[in-house]
Image 1 (spheres, rainbow, N blue to C red):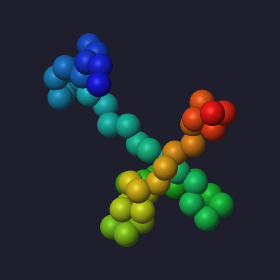
Image 2: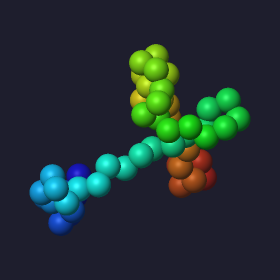
Image 3: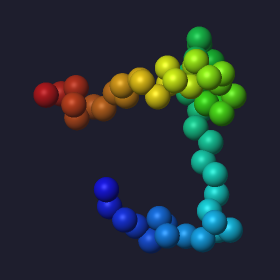
Amino acid sequence: MQTTQYANLPTEQRQRCEVWTRVMGYHRPVSQFNIGKRAEHQERRHFTESAASL
């Protein structure tokens, strides 16, 4: 993992990033998922175009 200048920012200068995903045909923030859905989301394998072309 590369260390960037942003990795060492003080807490006051950091901004929380909200992750959204598509669930059952609509988009929803992961922060609103229940415990089971959060665990399922962590287990997902994400599509990458470069891996698909091999």
